[in-house]
Length: 385
Image (cartoon, rainbow, N blue to C red; front, side, top):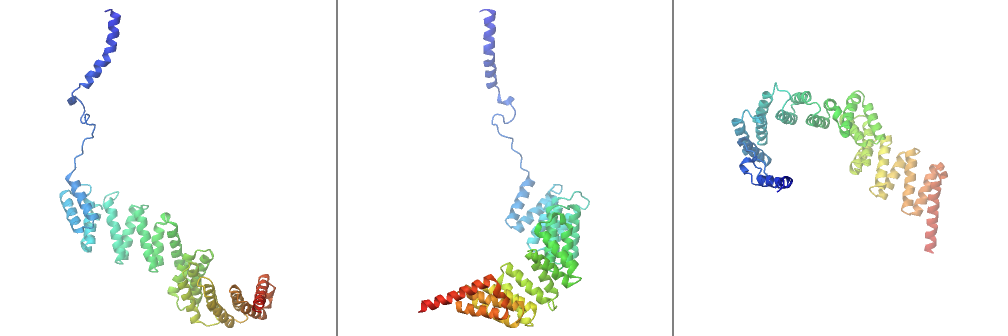
């Protein structure tokens, strides 16, 4: 065999020999798990098993069992990163079991454990959350305010801080403590949603205007109603009435609040308020007239009670003879007869309207309605022959 041929044969067989060698390599010389291609199994720590078991009991509302396991965890693993969280959950279990004093004591331990710590842990936040809620439920206002200030100092933009401030503000708003509500809202003003901003505006309006002059509060309500901010207007009218039930301005507030409820399609509340205004009188009061007008609109529209609406129109025309409210009522009465195709009654009602307010006869719609009534009467006469 020539030297050239030998070299060619060597080059051809060398890769094959290398492959055979690699296939025959001992698995003992390879990295761990290369033969099975499986990752090394992590060792499960006993503290993890205990913690997970305690959390599972808590999730299932097995508070007594969960409490015992969290106590055992804290006893065995004081140096674990979850130690303070175990204290927090012990307190939560105690609270669920009706042991408020023990719960507060455990949460106090959490706060003391982290007094000098920066930043505060999740356990600290959770404990502060529960304390804030508990203080609010028990009307411990100073303690609640103090807890919220601590949260704000440590986590000013944290969603938990914002949520707790909004909850506290909403509770104050319900209790008509508008100044306190305003303070809580303003503490997190930059993180408020649009509905919360409206509540802030409400609290600010009542605090700054209502306290000085009730008329200013009514004007603020009116402005919001004109801007179609009906919910805010309702809150302002209700706030006014809560403190000014016997005020001469109460009739105005009730009438407009009734209209707000009409706009919200809460017709029962609207009717109730307007009836209260009419009952309180006097019969010639402007707000009695407006309330009766809203009842006419309600009866003729959503309630579909045409006869009732016509009765109210007669009462309105009688109480406000010569006033625009009377003219309006007589026109609506005639128009309602027209809608029901009661042509004779419609013609009589339009004649009554024109006798008192002749200028109405020049209006093209009124001319058409009268013409329809006359034509309807004629057709009925012809059909009766």
